[in-house]
Length: 191
Image (cartoon, rainbow, N blue to C red):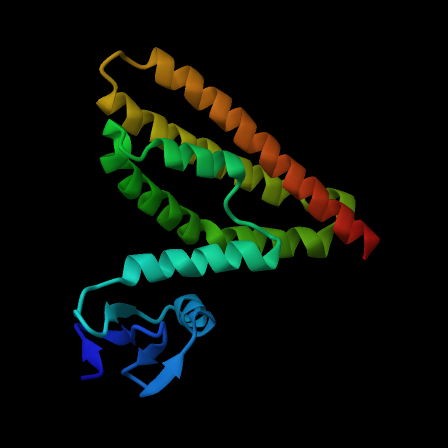
């Protein structure tokens, strides 16, 4: 059986080998990462029990990507915040919020690429990153506001604590983004 509900089934064996039932070949985590980037849907099942272990395998792929590239996507402050929500009353809200935020970011990705292409084609390198930076800052503001509103719904003590924490987090996120863009600017200037 190669497909389940349109998804390719990957079987994970006790020896940690992964078998793609759609192509009848053994695959690696790197192969699965490429499938994700291509938009190919798959589920990973424990070969012995049939248990769906897709979540843990995808998490393992993220861990490997974060550790091997040197260009991490998950800032330490984000990881700390994420860890703090485990076991918290907000744990139920965070997955939905993250999913919506990533979808909104994905939806705006084409627009950001277009803006960057236009900016790089029209002006000197020192001015090129202003439009994309403003776009990214706006996205961070929107995501932070959406999260603050979600937190308000579940906060029994009103919005004062959530609002000040949100503003601090937003400021820190913006500073991290600005620093990353400055580093990118330096690299472009060196080229």
